Length: 253
Ligand code: SF4
Image (cartoon, rainbow, N blue to C red; front, side, top):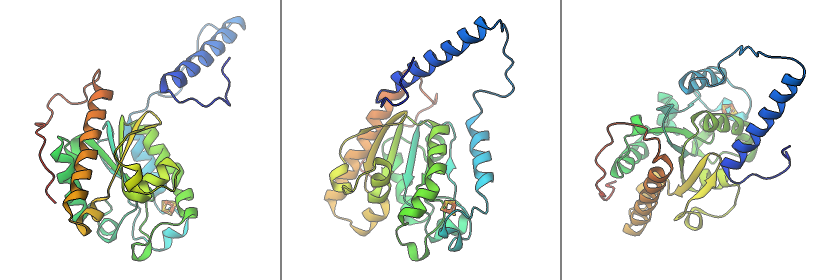
């Protein structure tokens, strides 16, 4: 029997625990004389359908005070089957207007950063934020707001099951990793995270404000790390038959 209190750090251990539990249940059913089990719902729902249902359920969400400052809920965008998930802080003014994450200048830079290591934003990525509604004057989301929205982000992550999460900026990296360490300390390495790894890097808005070459160089190193982790973790299941050229070009803000 598995011990539910045990911390599982290796996803393979978690799968093994689930399978052992399933085997115990099936043996118990067999001992009771049950020879057939009807499936009443799809055990592996299509991620696009699951995300659509989650997004629909969030419309008009009143669960935190950010509901008062938003025009619309900015749920997320991209490929529901992507193996790379990009997570930022929260919607800004333009995102709030359009209902899509990362559509302003920072979004354009993000698109170029991803392309610089061979990721097509729409095809290879799913993009979301820690909170789904715009804080007034683009202030940082507060802890109660993050806590209220966290189950929705976790549901997105568990639906997409990305191999790699690219966490953009202090806020996203700190919240996802549960630490107060700053992005300068967190970046430069990957962390085991749910079904894959998490790679923290600078937020594109920060790179736009700080055009110093050293920050761009560090972001470039992080992107290359994310690409390497992506290759390593998706090697046996290439997600797309027609990858973009993977020249190691410098990102151009
Ligand atoms: S930020 Fe999240 S929890 Fe708060 S109102 Fe928006 S969707 Fe709901």
